[in-house]
Length: 362
Image (cartoon, rainbow, N blue to C red; front, side):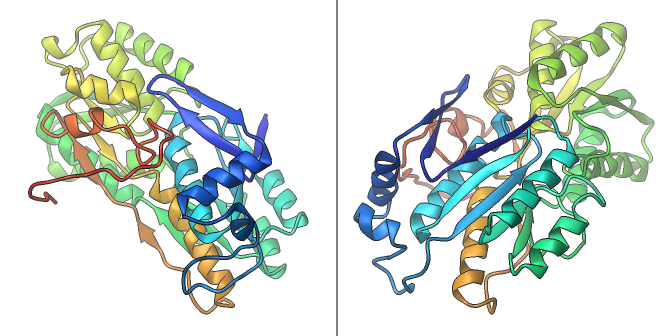
């Protein structure tokens, strides 16, 4: 099933344990956006700014996503909303709920036919998006990729270097486990937002020369089925030395399985990717050894910024590949994420400046 929401009229509100999409009236949404940049709603609606940026049409950008209701992308949507508020634009969130490339391609064609001013798409398939990207470019619509990438005619990629992140995961597995059988859980094998991570982990383990065997297990595109399949795998493989995952939902499922069966006390190591609430709690409680942050907020903010700059510069500026990074979250630093509620991590809808003090660690 495809999913499409226009965020000219909608805000996203999420708690620590759930996602709630609530529709606001157009006037209320515009007032909220305007307040965020210190402008009147009328000025924002006209695409005007109290900056040196020029007045411009009210550009509409379209994000095509592979799992539109996945909680990982809540901060991505906040990033897009904040960038639109800053630059006087709007965006639509659309695509597929269950990683169906055909639904995403249909969403791209709809965006092209509607005259979108720019498209950001998660390129989770090697070939499916080549034709709609070329069609968009021929129509004068710039296209960038985010979260997952293919080296086709898209103008830029904003997201983590996925294979490199997988190699970092693999090295961590080597350090944590030493030897034995481990499992790498993956929601949708072959999809280009996560398969490169698993490939990178395998490469790092092989390069280490250690006697570690990494088994690949599919978990599915929805959070509930991910936990069920992870727990079922463990119950059939109780001699496993480590349980790891390359996507947000599977990582949270590993954390829940580790906690339910008290596996950390049995010496099983565990870790994965992203910052879902259950993952952070799992680290804090000692059920997970680590997770890897890829800054999903930036994967919403930067595509809007680049598409906007490309439009106002007549194509002379804006496009740049952006690596949104790799940071290990462990017991030593997880408290700052648990103790801070923000749009940047997707656990608060409130716009605010977060104060910090002390030395900065890399």
